[in-house]
Image (cartoon, rainbow, N blue to C red; front, side, top):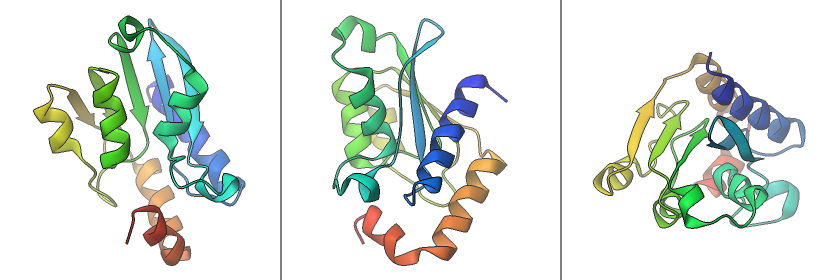
Length: 145
């Protein structure tokens, strides 16, 4: 498995261990992780700390030229909020662990010229299937239903 997707999965597992939603993300620039994060909505009482947003937060302020040369890895298809941030900062490539349990705004990203690769990784699928089965109310809150 790609070491960067593995890092995103490790972030997702941290989130689950903390009692949150198991979605993780890392932002990679020149072969190095510059930001990592996991969904911390529950842990922080935040309406916006999805995995990708937490990775952006932890990457800190970066010049646009850096973000335009990054790849973001995320264990789950990014929602419209996270896709909007990816588009806003000009990240050209997104690697998605899976989109079977949730189809985010991949079409929006592709329409904006972002390359989107979907792995359908079994670990990512199992993490989400288990979480959704055990926490349907929390899951629905996370996706705005």
